[in-house]
Structures are given as C-alpha cells and as structure tokens.
Amino acid sequence: MRHSRLAGVLALGMLAACSPTREEDPVSRMDAAREDSTQRDFRALRDATVTLYPGHCAGVVVADGRHALTAAHCIDGVPGERQPVLLRDGKLLGGEVKVVDTRRDMAVIRLDTVAPVHPLVVATTPPSPGTELLFAGRNDRPGEPQEVELRRLGRCPSLPSVPQALFTSLHGAKGDSGAPVVDRRLRVVGLVHGGAACSIAAPTAEVSPLLDMLVAEVARPDEQLGVGGAGNVGHP
Image (cartoon, rainbow, N blue to C red):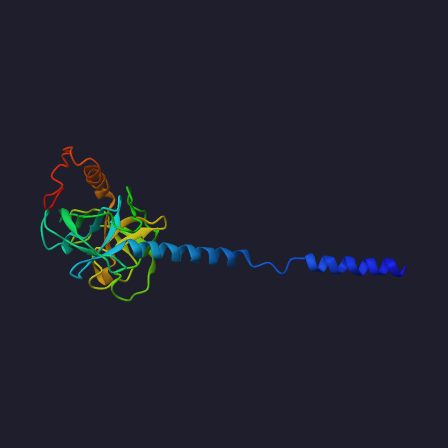
C-alpha cells in the first residue's frame, strides 16, 4: 500500500514538472513579433535612406544599389551635374544626376559606386487607400519613425500632372522632401513632396520602368538603350 501511495505521489510530481506553465497570450506573441518585424523594417528603411549633400532633402537607394531616387525640387542642377549623397553611417558617395522630372517631382541620381546598403525595390503599382505605410525621414536629425496610413489618392495643386498623389497621415518636417515612403513589404511607393506637415508624397510607380532602363544601361554600358529623353528636365 505504501509503495502504491509513493508511486502515486511520484506520478503526480512528474505530471506537475512536465505540465507547461501558463501559456503566453497568442495575441501578445503576435504583437511582439509584429513589433520586432516593424523595427527591422525601420532599420532597413533608414539604412537605405540618404541625405543629399550639402545637407538638404533626402533620397533612397533603390534597384541595383547604383541609383537613388529623390524629389526633383531638391535638385539644384540639371542632368549631368554632380550630386553627392550622405549615407546613414556618414560615408559620402559621389553621384551624377541622370533624370529630373519636374512634372512628377522625381529625380534619379546614379551613384559612382554601389552603395554598401540593401537597396529597396520601387513598387510598380500605386498603393490603395487604407494601406499601411512606413516613414522614417532624414537620418541626419532626430525623429521617431512612423507607421502611417495612405488616406487617399488625388490631385495636389503643386503636382497638377499627377492624378494620384499620395495623401498620407505622416508628419514630416521641412527638409524631409525626397524621403521614401514604403509599404509593409519595404517597397518604395512614394517620395515626400510637401503639403501640410509634408504629408503628401509623389508616387514612384511610374518611374519604375525608367529606372529599369537606367539599371540596364549600367549593366550594358556599350549599348545605346535610347531611354526616350530620360535625361531631360520635365521628362513626361
């Protein structure tokens, strides 16, 4: 009998030892995982963000790592002129202005070397209203990254040729022009253009085919690709 009771006590002890502690709330685990993922995305976004040098406006390294997008109104010169960019780690990279599209407020800089960061992909289609977006702004000044919403697509008075400018909930500051706005897949969907609190972004989807041509031009420098006037100010 004593042996039977002892065996029962040992069995109960083993069950207690093997019983799991109270499980963490699945919702809490999901929230923690989402927060970790968002922080990783913000780091990647900031790493790819550049500051035009001298320090005015922002841009983003895209595609093959040899090109950066920025707002056309941030470019003082014309295609062919030099435009260095400053990386998040303080490294300065030389670059040449390749495209200045004033109608879409979009400019492309070809960097002298591949930037030592993970370049971001440019979305080929515009996002839909309600899409969650990420914004970090310039790296050379303090500011919290933001999870924002695309509120609507529409015309902006300062972008009359763009029927689907991005109206977002982001709160930027003067000098954030050209900073990237990305979706949750880290695809660049827009560049800060202006508006109240710099909340309006110029969509980047239409520049994606042109960017592909510029990338191919680097890959095959001996071929004349005929980019259709890509270097002209106000490229349609």
